[in-house]
Image (cartoon, rainbow, N blue to C red; front, side):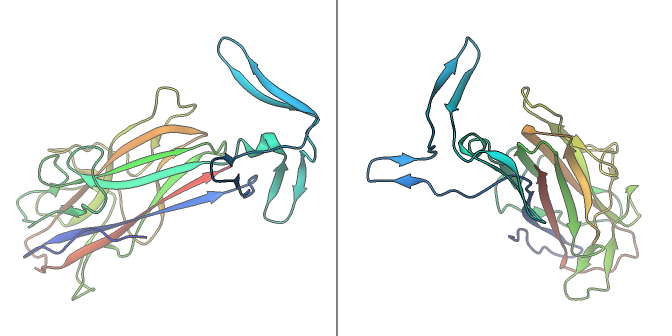
Length: 266
């Protein structure tokens, strides 16, 4: 877990961001690769033979008489699919969280909203206020979900935690307190078996100028993005938005720690 962001002046807001990866495995085992000074054997097998079978479009690494292969080895928490070929198809997940005004952003940039005024809604604008860029990929047939959770009920003052700019699912407007996230853009590789999709309440109408529909970000973990199955090259841009009223108590240390968690199921 890592913290990003900073403190700014007057009614200031800094967003600290963390990322976590969770893998729900039904078939996986750790195998140490054998190596020497010049070579590493990533996979080995005790069998009667094997070769590469090829066609115009495919190449298959096959074995004949592979020893100790099969399924059905299980415990309360794990299912083992053993042998040489299953090892080659072990679970894979990749997930990153970066911030910037343009993709791909950079690690550690944070999101500083600056001085908030009651005359406008402030948020990720593509020029001076960063967006959050999420990238994800996993070969879990059970799908991938990305959840988000905040350490407070909105933007909370560090010095006076009871002073909070609350978060709620709403369309933010100038002069009314509010804070939230929205998914501005989402895509996946053209060869991805399934789509990378934004989830309610983060899928409302939002952009970097005049549309300010946001989803709540508080201490309850909620799904912000997901795929129904294996995902290749998933990318997303998440906007951060906030608004204050004339009665919002001024502090120089309004902050939130927002955590994104990627979970793949195999």
